[in-house]
Image (cartoon, rainbow, N blue to C red; front, side, top):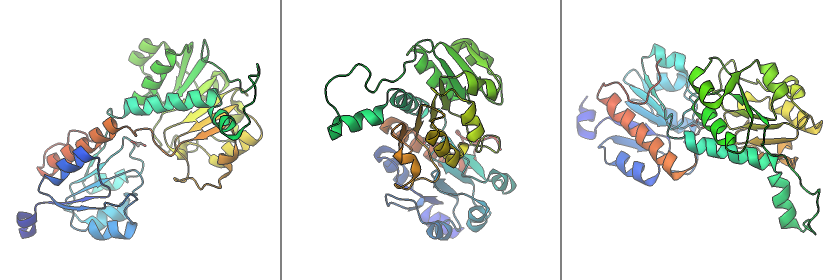
Length: 329
Ligand code: DGY
């Protein structure tokens, strides 16, 4: 329509990108509507602005449900999320409305795996207690048994979801001495298995035999609240549990109870329910539970590339071409 000729296609972006990708986005000649605050685009504003949009660039805290698709209208060609996870997008409606869905796999694998290892090390070596001790005067003389954690040498790692990120975490932790790698997931991964000498096991076996359990799977109906009281009960008392995937994979009240009852030794979380986690939440009071504010992909390198992939998806979709980084719906 005439507006497109004058102003270019309407692209709504719920966030500002990092400098290089932001500059490229602005140079595209789109009729760009962008929420530039350092916070989520308010839902009512998103619904107002998305009307008539040709493409929507969103992030994981934007809920892209049926209402967003229908409010946007039938001209909407693409929703592209600056994340590898897409549990915040209603794929059934995307399919129905034939809207392409873009995401950003691969480029954040290293960053997320690094942070997962960092949390695993932090939980294993009591980093939260240790930093507090150093800063609060609890640090006195060197003591043989003070703040002793556990190491990785010949220990068993359990990976929940041996996808790109799970594999990268396992190969990093093998360099720290991990002996056996167990994994659980929908599919057997023969190539990765051979590389890591990993073994597909039942969830019960993974829970019972792992010294370290890292959650690296997508959140789906199969993995939602997979880690409940029963699951924590089946873990070793010395187990370290780390989740950098999605908060919803853990039944959080059950995790609080498990920590209260000392069913496991330590926890590292990069994801919670909700996000942000209220500062008075029970999980914050455990000295053996390290919590980060969803920073898995937070490197300049990863975030710039994630932005670039979103732009490439938008350019392709507006040109009615197959998008380079898309889901098969
Ligand atoms: C993702 O990409 O899904 C992460 O949660 C944020 O980078």
